[in-house]
Structures are given as C-alpha cells and as structure tokens.
View 1: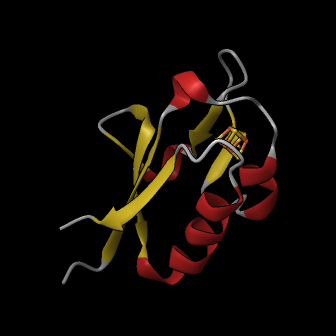
View 2: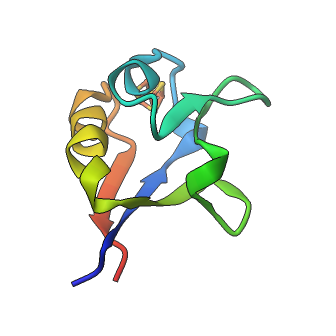
Length: 80
Ligand code: SF4
C-alpha cells in the first residue's frame, strides 16, 4: 500500500474547460504552454507535467477532479 496516489492526465485531449483546477487547485493548474491542464510542479514526476504523485490526503481532491473531467482524461491510481 503506497502512501502516494498516482495521477496522470492525457494532456493532448484536454479541452481547457478548467474544471480540474477549479475542483482541485492543489494538484492541477492551467499549463504555461498551450494552457492544457497540468500537474502542479510540486507533485510532478520526472519533470513530466502530465504525471504526478500526490499525498494520500489529496485523494478525494484528485478523485473529484477526475470524475468532473468532461472528457475523462484524468486517471487516478495507487502509485505502488
Ligand atoms: S477537467 Fe479535463 S478537460 Fe477540463 S481542464 Fe481539466 S483535464 Fe482538461
């Protein structure tokens, strides 16, 4: 059981609706490149803005964001 939650975003398919960074600004933000959603720098893994590992106490936050994404491109899972 990991104490981190893995989060990935299929950024190429982001439609810039803004729901995820409204629902969970602790983890998601508008990207500085094309404005696509990205994982905030503090939780990025390997400098990849599409991949993050977040503390378990943010699980509800990222799950809410994942469920609220209208195109279903936020994935949440045990980081192992
Ligand atoms: S909720 Fe989904 S589509 Fe909307 S900004 Fe976030 S990742 Fe992009």
